[in-house]
Each structure stands twice: as C-alpha cells, then as structure tokens.
Image (cartoon, rainbow, N blue to C red; front, side, top):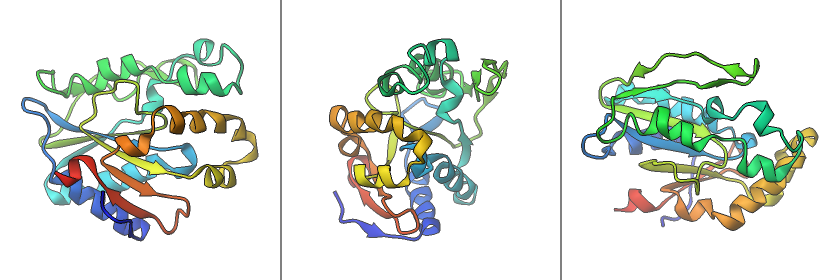
Length: 217
C-alpha cells in the first residue's frame, strides 16, 4: 500500500486513467473490466466519466456502463419499502444480470459485446437496448455502489472511500435512511482492503489516492 497522495480532482482522473491504460485484460478478453465503487455522494459516475474521457488519448477505447442500469424492477427492489437499508444492501443490484450481460461477454472467451442498460429505472420497465461491441483495446468502466463482495468479475477495482462521519455529513437528509447499508458494507466486505486503488474522498475537492493490489505488482 502506498502513502496517500493528495491530488486535485482533475489530477486524480489523470492518474487513474494512466494506471488503467497501462493495465492488461485477462488473456482472451475484449476489455479490461474496471469497477468504480463508492456511495452516491462520492459521485463514482463522475469519476468514471472523467477517466473515460482521458483514455482515448492514452491509446485505449473507453466504455462506461453504470451499474444502476442493472438494478432490479421496483416490485423486487422496493418489496420491503422505499427506505429499507437491508434491501438497499442486498436487493437492488442484479449482479447476475450485470455479469451475464456485460462483464462475462467482454471477458475471456466472450462475444466482445455488452448491454449498455437492462432496466429503465424512470419508467420501471425493460430498456430494450441492443448489445454493442466494445472498441479496440477497450477499458469498460462500471460506476456504482456496493459493487464488491457479490462475485462480479472485475479486473481492477477503484473504491471511493468515505468515512462514516463524512457519509453522514455529505448525504442529503432524504437519503440518510441508506447509511446503514454502507456501514454494513464496510463491516462485512471491507471494500478498502479489496480495492486496487482507493480514493480518500472525505473532502471531494481534495481527494487523495492510495495504490495497492494490482497496482503494486
């Protein structure tokens, strides 16, 4: 594990883009599969987009597939109510569908095609998207929450870490009900320990980067 390196948000995206651009996928895979994991208030979608924007200049194609496009229908996701933290932790993401439609097809022996979205959350119905081919030398980034510990076959994991106090401080009042899900995630999965890159994000305008795992080998 490296010492925390303070960076501006732009420099953080530069550094992460350089790291993933230099990483190879598994033999026979069409893309390097990268999780950008963190609570919504840490804005993993924005970081994934910023990294993706930088990759073509580094010789890599880039695709962003948000994990929330693979949430379950409301009838399943909200079966125990709209503010159940246990359901938020276990029931929202369809990890099997994300693997089947995105991560496995671009992995070793796959078709090289991915489904950009499975479920339209706004309309609560199937999105009816068609599979798309990944570009050459692709990096496929999946931003989302609670992505580790559920068997998703990522090659690289970037985790945006917020301490519990920072999560409480940054989370809007109408979303505080979900905080126990993230406390449970920290306790049961320990996402910091599993990640290859950890972004210390308690102060979003002053992040710091810690490298470990794959990026130390």
